[in-house]
Amino acid sequence: MTTIIYNAKTNEIGVDSRMTCGDTILDDSYQKSKKVSGVLFFCTGNAGDFDLAIENYFSEHPTEIIPDCTLLVADKGSVKELSFDGSGNRFITDVMTSYGYGSGGLWALAALDHGKSTRDAVKYAISRDCHSGGKIRVIKL
Image 1 (cartoon, rainbow, N blue to C red):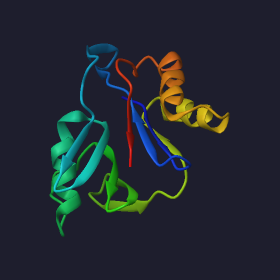
Image 2: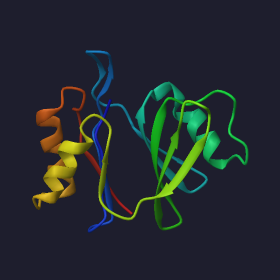
Image 3: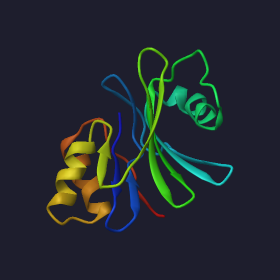
Image 4: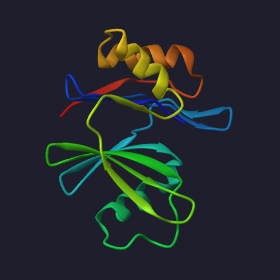
């Protein structure tokens, strides 16, 4: 999984760089963000579905294959969540408050609630969540 945190106070997104498969660490320097057509995407879930989910964001009609991931999207000054249900429905929701995603998301959100910076919130999540790790990247929106 991963740790992605949106800090609404500072308008920053923090993310770790660990990629896992089950209990195995595959990579500690994986890039979990992509910029496409001026839109910045952050992925948690199945990394193999990242491009498919991005394609769904821009499409009027979602593809028949359902991506197994959730994306945090920075688009034209707003932050959105892109998610899918088991029936193939696509949901694009405005994110108005700080929120954490992935297996370390709740740890990171708790750290923000206790006054930690975005970077320190991800660092704290990494200390508690075995599926988060590697480099910490913080992007100011």
